[in-house]
Length: 149
Image: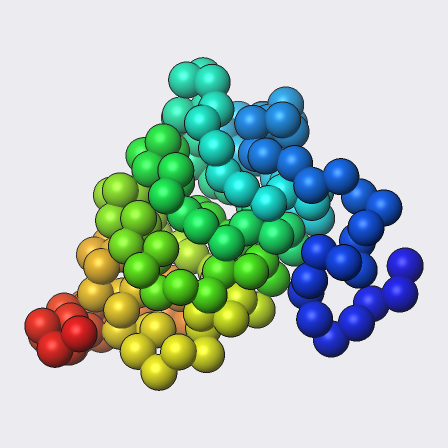
């Protein structure tokens, strides 16, 4: 498969874009790995999946995180290499009170000037963002910066 510099859907025309609920059968011990499954949206899933603690959704086409709150037990979430571009959708991460490790690298939103303070300020127990450790001092500084956003 020929890759282009863009993560657009057109380069994967032969794949059928799917919703998360259509591929949620690979759950083992509270962990889900759905990397490069052509997932374009996170939709409602069966309640038996709400206890998932680790979710890998890298290399898909996800743009919106509105429904991420249905996984309140998540501690580890990788959304690297998706199509998340709007800072406002990151507010939905506040619905994940246990989230400690988050990877959003490779998404357009990471190029935004206030990306890191925005995420760190809203995700109060986050310990690692895009493979970088977050200290309590980072949290305090970012929460103060949120007042200005």
